[in-house]
Image: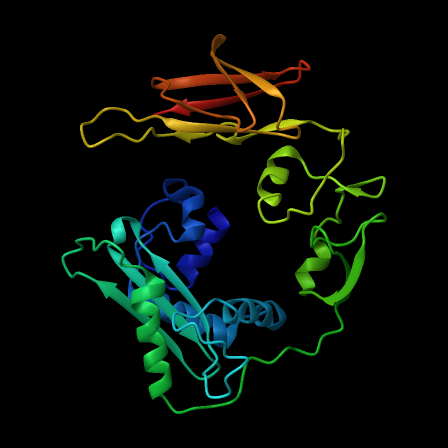
Length: 305
């Protein structure tokens, strides 16, 4: 987080007035105040002056594929203008953002109320996105697009994990940024099977129904999804001021296993299938422990503010 926070400051965002720990991982998703002119300028600088042109090309290709608000497929209609674009919506529907990029232009749009009052249904994709494309269509047209750099950095990449291929991985050859050669190779293949740790598996299976994993993985069979070890959390409150609690989640390789939950040594409940409980621990440090039918145990220590 400190490295990413520093990168945003170097990109000209003067509104990040707190330390990286104040924002946490939400900063990656835009969890900080920003100004339209500075956000647009940062995207423009990235498009024009990114040091790694191959990484830029992959980024622009990904952002070009985002579903357009007009539902038009630029690949089927020659007159449709191509753009790499990104949207954002702030908490409470107070701000709707859209930034679009071509090799010639960077366009930033904000929609909302000047007094900061939220508007139900106000989103970047439905409010700011259409305006951004309308502006793009008014500007002088050009057929040029971000060019894929000529590069000699070819590498064998695991088709399952996207990491550098290990000895047992199914492989494909592809161009990668130079920094990619410094990353660790894939180590998620066991005896020809693609096996992820429980928490990663929990996320991966939601978008890859073909994933089967190993019947009995060699490593740990369950992990906490939330909270992470050493986390400091704040429990949300209702409008009345009553503490609402937080949802604690565990991923288990075998979803049919029963899990028993213990908070600070005291039994608090059990789950089967979907392993989650809403808890409202008091302020201070706590230890949450879960045990499955086979005696596997995992614990996490966290602090409530």
